[in-house]
Amino acid sequence: MEFYDVVKDRHSVRVFTARPIEEQRIERILEAANAAPSAGDLQAYEIFVLRDKTMLASLAKAAYGQAFIARAQLALVFCTNARRSTVKYGARGERLYAIQDASIAATFAMLAIAAEGLATTWIGAFDDDRVAEVIGNPPGLVPVAIIPIGYPGEDPLPTPRRPLSDIVHEL
Image (tube, rainbow, N blue to C red):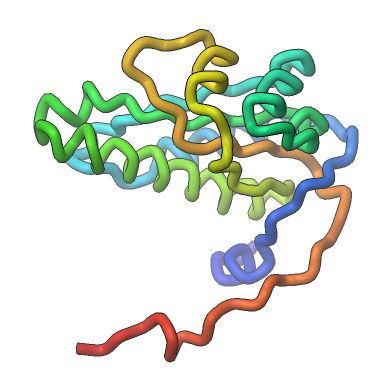
């Protein structure tokens, strides 16, 4: 798919089919996330891949009952690893750059998911402590986003976007 088609055609999907995802697609998605730019090229994030249905159900509960997460074939949990950024950037690395790094990597993954003909939506509404518990309470890591992945089971209409004239400010 052409890049601008990927951007235009990507929509938040919350209904997934039961069709398994081919491993090479998952690998390409993870490689895309790994290619994301990061502050100082430190990649101050970690990615957890959850495939087990029990873990996906626990993740859905940790995300305030967003049950569709449990129906995905897998989910990626992006976490900050602030220690990687703090070494070079101090408090700003911990407070900001690690969050930016994890967010950019998750966004690259989302674009790759769309390019692979798969579906997802960004999940930011969750209990940090409960998500951390689901992924094994890794010390020093803070969850930033949950990205459930599956083949689309719906084709939602595009949501309206603000016109560029409302959001772009030429100086």
